[in-house]
Amino acid sequence: MSLSSSLEMARATHTGMVRAHNEDSIATDAEIGLAVLADGMGGYNAGEVASGIATSLISSETREALVRHSPHEVDRVTGSPFAAKLLADIIGKANTSIFQSASRQPQYAGMGTTLVVALFCNNQLTIAHIGDSRCYRQRGGKLEQVTRDHSLLQEQIDSGLLTKEAAKRSQNKNLVTRALGIEPAVEAEIHTYPAQQGDIYLICSDGLNDMVADEDIEMTLGAFGANLQLAAEQLVQMANDNGGRDNISVVLIRVKKDFPADEGVLAKFFSWFK
Amino acid sequence: MAKLILSLDGQLIKEFALSKERTTIGRKPHNDIQIDNLAVSGEHAIIMTILNDSFLEDLGSTNGTLVNGLPVKKHFLQNNDTVEIGKYKLKYMNEAPASMNRAEFEKTMVLRTPAAAAASKQVREPSDTQTDTGFQATLGSSIPGTIPQPAAAAGAATFAPTASIPSKPAVSPAASPPPAAPAAAAASPPPGQPAAPAGAAATATRGVGTIQILSGANAGKELPLTKPLTTLGKPGVQVAVIAKRPQGHFITHVEGAVFPLVNGKTLDAQAHQLDDHDIIELAGVKMEFFLKP
Image (cartoon, rainbow over all chains, first blue to last red; front, side, top):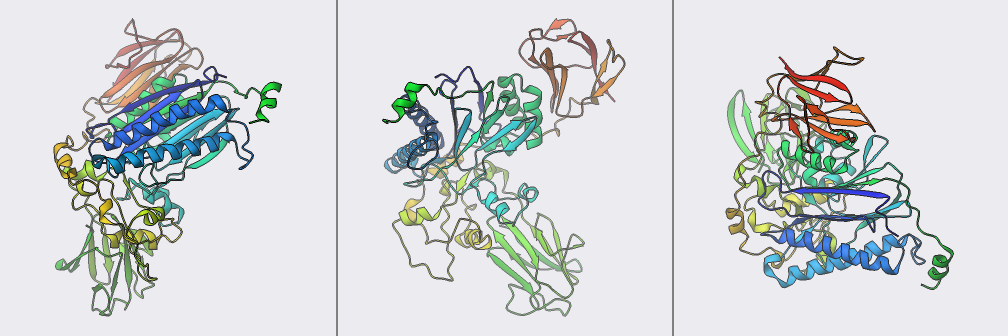
């Protein structure tokens, strides 16, 4: 079942005003309701390599896996939607792939990437993330951060050492506590949320949220909401107008209408045998 | 590295580098910064340093601690803060890294997690008191001088006890990045500091961008464009947005089959920079853009 009649997706990525390369990588596929964003790190072009492996491998593997399974089916072992297990498995594969290329090729040693994967199915959204790239949701004109960074600052905020305001003045930015591809195994944080018609989801690298305040992101999604592509470009432009210190990547997804899964009798029947 | 400059009545006494996770200040001789004066408590205050951030805490001293003239219990130190203890002043200096290294410095790095310790070949018996935390910059050698010492990184683990970066044996140096990295750093010079962040380069804004409605029910009304974005028109019919940027004001068509006109010409899909006294026509309403002095 194609989701492209229910989901609209737009994306933009930019090197920014300071960096020499764009180490971010993004992929979207409205047909299967998938969006992937990765912010790579590592010397030379290793960051690009890591984020590139992550987005391409995750998109192609997800597309393949969805031919065999519907992501809304409940996994009998874990009791959570199959989407969560599917993403965990595929992210594990991507981790192995990046980690192995890094160990085989000295110029890629230590490369890694942050990751956000969003998979829409059956009026739900499953989000997997690692590191400090984010997913936000704009609903009823209000912007809310959906993911919580895996970063030193976030941990300091959680422990009460820093307030959210004070964190903006910290000199310890850009320290992530989890990344894809730097260790033999990684655990992605995965949650499933109900999606509603009219929701706009924003997935971005820290090049956006470090340069543009949440209030301004909210204002932009409000003003440009009718034109998702313009909204994406406007966000990138605002980050650059504010200094563009890092690569900036933005994926926007609008829920145009409900997308219930196809629960035909036959589909149910066959799912018993899987 | 951050430092404190101790002075009395404007006379510089000594400089202290904040190289340790905990730097103690007090009258007793065991303090890292000893101030032998009766107005200073035996254990007066402590400074916790986590990588590039430092936090001051008064330890319940008799005469208190001031920062920039205000009494504090706990304070997140900022560059140029002046800490006052009795008649003594401690100036906190923590300048952002030089612009040469700035772009490199700001690259994302990974604080290694316990899993890495298990994976690393070198395993050392962790003692109770030792909080030696391995810190791996994935850029490692490309940022000479900016890699925090293990001592500082250990602070991250011990100072935030609920954080999930527990102390762990040091990571083997074999895991460090390729030696060729410094060349990469030198070969990719960041094009200076970002061109004067937001607004500073506001040469184009000689006044407050303002819209005056010329026709329709609201004729004569003025709308100052103070926000970064201002929406004009009717949602679902025709909407345009004026963005306030460092270079000036730009109008963009967002929604609707009909595009707005500027000075009688139809806009295309691109953003269009507005000049003083441009006439905009949108959803049947005429309005003028001008810069209000």
